[in-house]
Length: 344
Image (cartoon, rainbow, N blue to C red):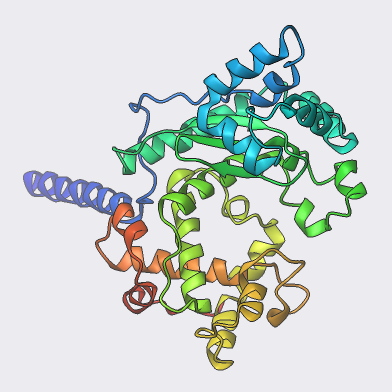
């Protein structure tokens, strides 16, 4: 009798252990991976500071050294970002000083210098993001990260070997310069230091895996943008969903609460396959809200729905992140996703 009780107790203990082991592996977030052994350290290079110091000493020599140090980024900065042309122009230094001495640029540079004395927090976030990138894409080349000031016209620039961060686009939603420039409130909410690492990895995804639609329907845009958001899930699994979507918590709650209603509205109003971009942009671009869903809704709701479709696709199919990012048949992703949102 005693042996039978011991035997039964052992079976019960074993069953409990098996239950919790199975439950752990079934419910464990597949994107919660260990990257501690990946040897990557991101250190931002302060091109913005070095450019400000060009007149300390021989400006011609300093520019030559900057050009040699920053190679393709230096060229893109001059030709495309601030549009003053190359160093082969005899008036280059005059044009550069005119740009640097512009009131809004000089004020932005001052604010950047004050707010971004220490880049260690951003470096740590980017290090973690690129460690995850290497985990999923072992052959990926990690670009150099440089900072710049460009007169509020560029946030992040990806050149292949460099990713440039326009720090004057991340001075915080309360920045008085943004008010002077009449930048809308909804845009200023996204111009914060917390968005830098998000925008850097988004720029990487957009450049390495560009949009390749058949007909540029709303559905194609929303799944492509949802795929980028899923990529951010993989790169920054510890970031909140609100942060990765550039939402407030209230805006995220709206999406969760009305997910079924929004999806039904798109279907019933035959909007999934619309190609007229003025209509499409209402659902995928920044705005005060999504007009189709009322003034209490957040912007870019179609992108959030696209993320839910992609998540469902990844849950119901044995697909790697790399295979997902290479997939350009967006209708296939929807068909295989088995997406069927419930009322919340």
